[in-house]
Length: 287
Image 1 (cartoon, rainbow, N blue to C red):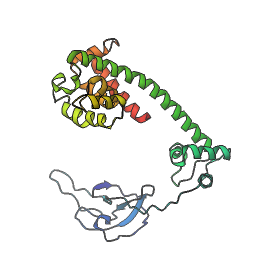
Image 2 (image 1 turned 135 degrees about the vertical axis):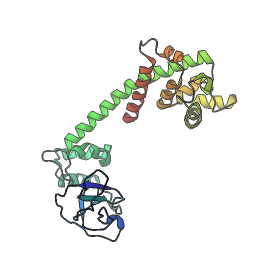
Image 3 (image 1 turned 45 degrees about the vertical axis):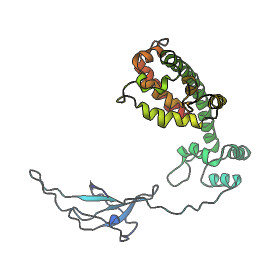
Image 4 (image 1 turned 60 degrees about the vertical axis):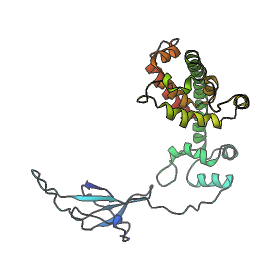
């Protein structure tokens, strides 16, 4: 429970005390007064305003203060989920009932069938009002256009990111492999100290599980012929590690090795490190 000093502006009571100490109004002296009010219907959280002035807070060198306290319940009020599954026709009828314009019903039904109501709901959400109805003039076609715009933008971004990602994988592999050997990535001495890069965590908790989860033919071949799996050469490991793991690997590389990777691009290794991290974040958003 936490308290916040508020200026009294008046409120309408919408409930009563249920005996829960967290659902009572508390003054500074611990006494309980006031009414229960709901200030946020959408999140179904309960708030309470005291209508009795708080006991002055006597602090040395400060004038006594009076005011009201605002108390929030420790958790949101929940209820059982009992919404039924609706047919595509029923889903469209519900949207229409709530005020969403439906231009071509056949196209709208087809969109619900191939995309799903739940996925599309993110794109008509900006047109919804607090009471779950829609703004005047909002249409299903507008939501569908937003979805198509978002889909095409994500595909364009993923295409560009893939090119950067593959190039980075190739250059990191080449730099580490030629300088330190096939298992360069497995030796912590080839990287920054743990204060900047926790190699053990990156390798044992990040990379090795990714290798174990991968179902690549070249990994099956290595496992059958060579010892040490999942300890595989850098040129195999770099093909199955996530972009996030690749980003962390580059960040942990020593400065001369980082410079070797980006020397053809004419940028500072620190800048490249930042770019790779941002690229990872964007890719995860687009995926």
